[in-house]
Amino acid sequence: MFCKKMIFVWLLFYCCFGYSQTVSTVFKKLGEQYSVAKPLQYQSKYVLYKDFDSKKIEESYKGSFYKNSQNEIYMKIGDTEILNSKSVNLKISHPEKAIEISNPVPTYYGDFDMKPLLELCKIEKFIDYKSYWEITLTVKPFSSLPYSKIIVMVSKTYFLQKQVFYYNTATNFSQDFRKPDVHYPRLEIVYANYNRNAVNASIFKNSTYFTASGKDGIVLSPRLKNYEIVDQRNNSNN
Image: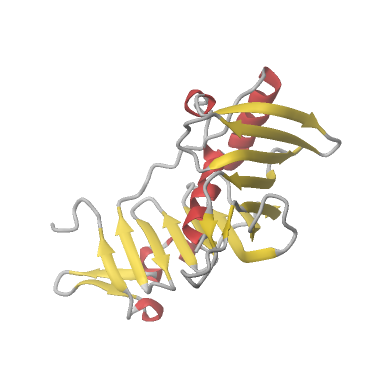
């Protein structure tokens, strides 16, 4: 239910924010860690709670992130895989048994353009702890963001440790339309096991997922052979 939202949440750290010169520096150096042309790996855990203050886990997903020295990216969140290589962008939904193929998306990791999000959010707190910084953002009224508050924790080595998202839209968790179960959820994402070990090159190769055939078009790999293909590339009809 929340997997697609989680993917959006994971991408949110590309668009960080500024509050003071110190906070700006923290996020600039955070971006440099993710953008440098070196391999990067880490694991993540996504935990959804029904309410802002709930302690009972409603849903939980594990995630993985891999980047090579060419800044090609592969990530998996729950049952969804995403690849953005130099030649293609793939989104594979295993529950839906579908693979979406599109042109690669230029990935922006460098100095963040803070102005757009400063129009949507304001930094309420910036706390310097011994091993990490904690930044609390509140979303301004009439913002398009689906959150009321976001908490970001950045380690002193300039990697994300944790993010907490408080949704400002109600979600009905009930499976029975006659008995609504409406709540304002909280999503927590914890990041761990950062390293710069080399990543298996096959993860970023098209042939791991599909091959192109002049006669038959796209031929999926054996593990994906029964999946629906949605080809959205600009040259897909060429």
